[in-house]
Image (cartoon, rainbow, N blue to C red; front, side, top):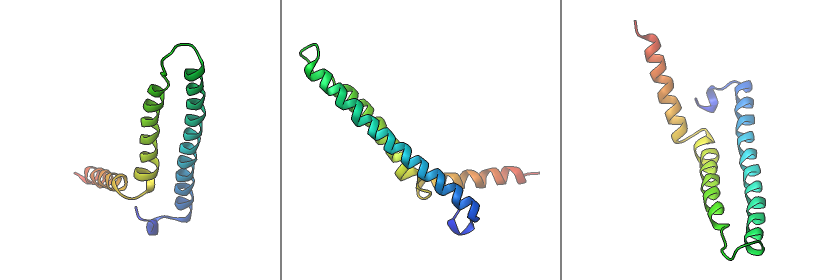
Length: 99
């Protein structure tokens, strides 16, 4: 679906959905930074001699990166996601039109 074929209501809905997804990623990133700073400080000044805070930092960081790819790359309305949606839409229309 191209922006030219969308009604003003559909454009507004899509814009709100995309803005919400981006705000969700920013909130996720802020929580990631705050929690990992806390974990690092506990690891540094807490019990034990090993710094264990690297494991959650890397694991959660991978999740945050994948979330960012989903929001900013695949969710942009173009590219791979849009082609896949269009392909599925065409497939469903063909199935519907079969006798």
